[in-house]
Length: 346
Image (cartoon, rainbow, N blue to C red; front, side):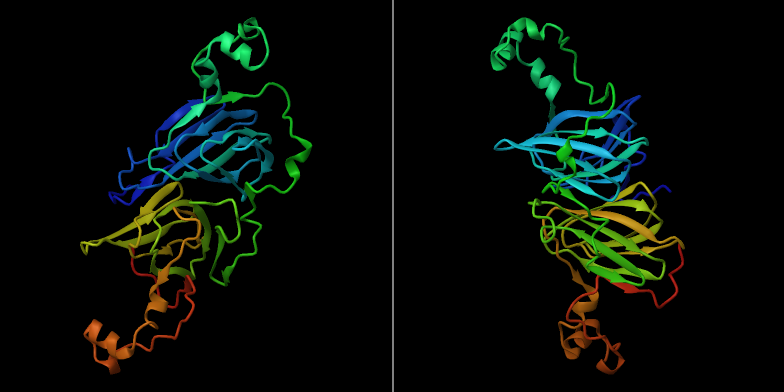
């Protein structure tokens, strides 16, 4: 579904920044999605046996959600921190800026990963290109080997995705608990209603997070994400499934209402009021990334309890007797039930 909204772009239809027979990488950055600030989004597809070559992010931490398939992630972080773990659908992994890591499809089906980085213009170095930058003699000295040991290296530019030769080697320790791995789908949702739920990958539950977090939001067609805003974080969402409608209010008073479909991404700047509702019978599943480790929100429902009826009457220009009987709401619910018919789709 085409849209002209500056808040929306399609990650599914974005041109691949890299592609070969073993997989592909596409992304949305500030270069092709200008509204982005402090965040970007990547989609990585790996065919069976495909390997995202070892590399490291130059300027951003990263969190990623495995949509399908099974991948092995291995990394070396600061202070000689080694880690290797298997990530399955519904699970997430965290990579610190500068930590070298690889992603390997160790299953029998295509793997798909949605990753968010804490910069609007990500950059990385590859292990192969970093070796290419050094002479055979320098590499030999590094490893206590003769320079001839590296004569077979042909110094070609790195392929971002390569194919593994032979079966996958999964370390025995890969199944152990790991601070960089978080099972968001396996979490008992902290917010759960008959009409929707939110699972929260944030600092409170995942200590590795420093400047990113993610909500796995599922809403049935009988529910709605109430109008709200995030006072300290922007919001970068990805539509995993379902069709939805979203409305955003800009500071100049303009209103942007648009529809979303699977593969779409959207961006809401910090403190902009917005809301989300499902349009189809199947409901929606959004992966929503934030540029803070503990995102907060202020909802319309609780806002009506923050002020006296006299203040609300004056603010809305409505006599107090004509004001709705707003329910007292000391803790905002985040998701509300749909008690009225959905507004017509234009």
